Length: 95
Image 1 (cartoon, rainbow, N blue to C red):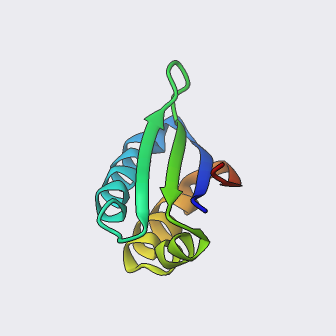
Image 2: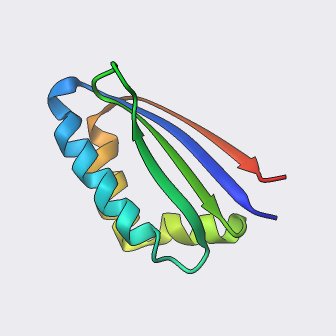
């Protein structure tokens, strides 16, 4: 069963360009992962510093492999997360 992740990331407007650039880089690398089915980055209209990510993987193991990837650590854990003021994540099985 496919596995989806919906993440809401919030940062200060001053950090928006850095977060956006890192998210777009991780999108490119994640889409090349064998189990990735979709990785979309959205900037919320009229809310500076607010992003919504939609990710879909073949299964939970595919998502776990994504979290173990070097680009996840470098771009998300070390670059994006320290700049966030809030982060909300929903995990779901795709029906």
